[in-house]
Image 1 (cartoon, helix red, strand yellow):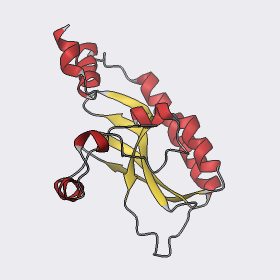
Image 2 (cartoon, helix red, strand yellow):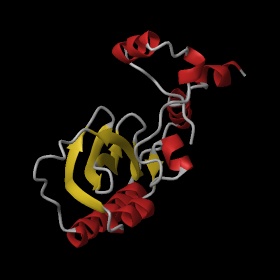
Image 3 (cartoon, helix red, strand yellow):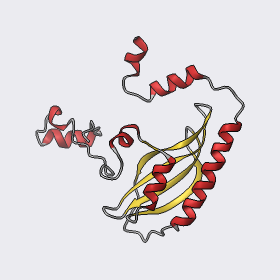
Image 4 (spheres, one colour):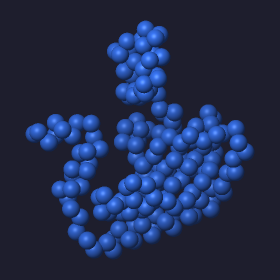
Length: 173
């Protein structure tokens, strides 16, 4: 999958020093999990509960941690996994309440984790992790069904559009 790469200042200077033009470096980014996740999942940075369960069952994927925590968007479960083939870690978060959208989230978003794989990592028991994930998934679905407050659809639509690159052009239409 070709995806536009983003570079920080030092990377920009290094590429400029090598004489690589802007046009040549547009599609140089390759996601570390490109062969594992589908193109659609990489595009939207999102996987379903069932897909994450399938990934965890893969023998080449090990679970490093699963913990409840919060970020700027809400309270979620964070699951960090490691691909043993090339030692690339990924953290998935979901199964929680999204404060900004005022709704429960049953899918998982993900981001690349920086983990020192030279350390002796302690891998978690996959069966226990899958059982805990299932209980949290069922609990989140139940909370979502019992959630009484009417969602603000206009705010949710604007929040969705703010996540996309072409939000401004959609607002002009």
